[in-house]
Structure formats: structure tokens, C-alpha cells
Amino acid sequence: MEERILIVDDDITFALMLRTWLSKRGFGVETASSAAAARTALGAGAFSLVLSDMRLPDEDGIALLQWMAGAGVTAPVIVMTSYAEIQNAVRCMKLGARDYVAKPVNPDELLKKIREALDTPAPKTPAAKPAPRPAKGGPAEALNYIEGRSDAARQLYEHIRLVAPTNMSVLVNGESGTGKEHVAQLVHRESRRAGKPFVAVDCGAIPRELAASEFFGHVKGSFTGALSDKMGAFEAADGGTLFLDEVGNLTYETQVQLLRALQERRIRPVGSNREIPVDIRLVAATNEDLEAAIARGTFRADLYHRINSFTLRMPCLRQMREDIPLYADFFLDQANRELDKRIVGFDPAAAAALAAYEWPGNLRQLRNAVLSATLLAAGEYVTCRDLPEEITGGPAAESPAAPLPLRDRASEEEQIRRALAAAGGNKSQAAKLLGIDRKTLYNKLHLYGIE
Image 1 (tube, one colour):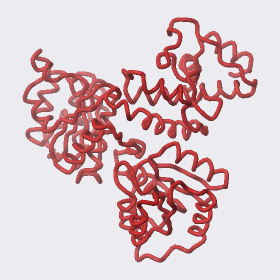
Image 2 (image 1 turned 90 degrees about the horizontal axis):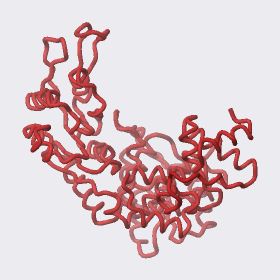
Image 3 (image 1 turned 180 degrees about the horizontal axis):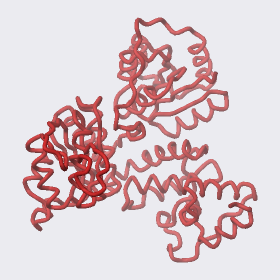
Image 4 (image 1 turned 90 degrees about the vertical axis):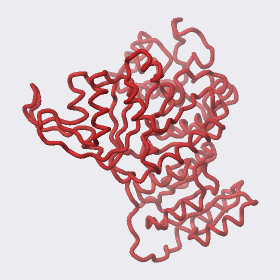
């Protein structure tokens, strides 16, 4: 049976290099860049050993050890720490860590300690509980995140930690792509409702005539097409958190219905005579200026004050420019796992291009750019040639696309197949990922006999 190791370190490049090195020695390896991501990974699967840095962006190695002890996770832990923090490493040993290793890590010494930890039987613990799974409605992927280190990012996460344990309604305000739903899920996860459902509703995607049914449910036969009873979002989120994404898109009529439900904490399904009490914590998100919408008469002031007990303002990526390398490395780690690649990092020119770009699409755009570049990269590092042209200042998008760089025939064919898989078979999207036009892609599909 394969021995699996979880590496917990926010230095994404170091973690990736360590993962590659250990994988070549026969271990199954996963990485997590924060204590929260480590808890999610440990809750979702069994590991033979945990290799954790002492300093993490959200908590420290000591807090992770304490959580593991409380959750009954018995995997041995080796702590990585600097020479200046040996005292803390000793504290970790007292809390149950099997060993520690000083940074910079000596590979041979580390491998020896890993082997010793795996070969030593785990101490027996009384009635150990299985590690908890992520809460219903809060997918593990959404909790796999990293906190920025800029002043703007630190202030955001400090505010999250302050408001999450309360029952206050929260309005998350920020540009598209800044991670508003991730923050909503984090508020839920850090609240007293963490074990209850997290239900997200995209307010911009609800047809006007079905809004009441989506929020409050309906009974069979209450309108044409109501073939069975349906539970609404309020009832589904009972005890937990209801997340209203792009709340500014609600129609005025729906706003009135929503306000009444929030005030009375009771709902009535469409076509029903019975009222259902609900207990929800509301988190809403918008990229609009709702105060301006109130002035225009398109958003109700009383609903605004009901959903806005506390505002979390999402910084855009250009306000966290010093965090761009950190996020880029984080997304590269995700892309390597998703595409089964082993790209080590970004070369200096590519890193400079990422840091200089304005990122109008924020973190979502950065993630997509890194995913595309990881797919295209042929060497160990992402280069400017692999990045989208709008980032590197290359030729305008409307100019003829440069042909796919010719390497050997097999690698080009594999690159095209990966692009098609990443695009779900959509040839236009695959051509965009590859940086070529559709005609060139069709010619290459014909050349390689790809259906």
C-alpha cells in the first residue's frame, strides 16, 4: 500500500519541489498551503505522515497539532522550522510531533526522519475519533486557500475572524473575481454554524417568476410545472448560512418578499398555507454600489440595512500587488495537480510580467492565466511565451495568432490533447488556451488524427 505524505507549507515553490522529490522516491504526496487547507485534506483522506512548516499564514504548526489531537488524527508529524525556532519545535514534540527538521532542509536527513517515523508504530490513543469531514454545503475545494500578506489582505482576514463567530449579517462587497464566495464560505466555516448547511443562491440567475419558489419552496400543483414539492433555499439552509451572490440583481418584488422573510424568520412555500420557522445567518455579496442603487430607486434601503450589519470590502488584486507572486505560486500548485504536470515556478521575466499587470479580472483572471500557462509550459518554468498576450504586452488579440511552438511531434500532440481535455472538448476554448486560431487547431487535429 502506498505511503501518503501531506506537506503543509505556504512556500508553494518549496512544497512543490519537495513533493516532486518525495514522489520520485515512491511516496504519494499532497500539499496544503495553510492550516485550514491541511485540516480539509486530513478530513478527506488518510495520510501516513504529515510534514508541516512551523509558520503558516493562518495558524501555526502548534495549532494544527492541537487540532489533530482533538480530531483523533494519528498520522505522525514532522515539523520543519528555522534554527531560531527550535524552542517551538520542542513544544511541538511535547504535543505529539514525532520529530523536527531545521530549514534549509537536508534531503538525506529528512528522508531518514520520514523513514524512522513511518517505521515506528504509532502510540495508542484512547477512543480516537475519525477526522471530521467538511461541513455539508462547504466543499473542500473552496476551503483550499491562502491568505495574502499585504496590508489589505491582512485587514480583510482580520475582519473575517472578528465577524465570523457572531450572528451578524455580512455584506461582501468587491469587484468581480476577487473571491467573494470564498470569503462567504470562510465566514461560515469559522462560525458556530460550521457543522450546518451552507447554501449559495446566484441571484442573477433566478427568473423573476421563479424567485419565490427558489427562496421559499413550493408545494406540488401550486403552479404549472410544479410536479412535486420543492424545498427552498431558506429551509435548506436552516441552522446554517444562506449566501446570496450578486444580491443587487434581485427584482424589487423579490426584495420585498426577502425582507419579510428576514424580518419574521418564517417562510411560506408557494401554494402552501403553513408557515415554516427558519434560523439562518445571511451573507450577501455584490460588485455593485448598493447605496447608489438605493438613490436610483432600484434597491430597497430597508433591505440594504437588514443584510448589511457588517461590510467586508474585498481588495482588488492591484491593491495587493505584493501578493501576486504568492497567489501565482498557489495557483501553479493547483494547476500542476489538475493537469498532472510538474512545473517548478515562473522564470524572472514571467514573474515580472505577472507583477506588473493590472488584473481587471482579479484572482479569477490570475488563476485562469496560470492554468493556461501551466498547460502550455514545455520546460520546468513558465515563461512569457506561455502567458496570455494581454499580460505580456504581446500582439493584439485581433492579430493573427502565432503558430503553436513546434517541439517534437509527440509533445505537441499531447499538448493539444490536454488543451481539449481542459476545455471539455470545446475547440474554440482549446485554441484560446493554446494561443492559436481555430483554423490552425483544426489543421493540427487533422494532422494528428485527433477526433
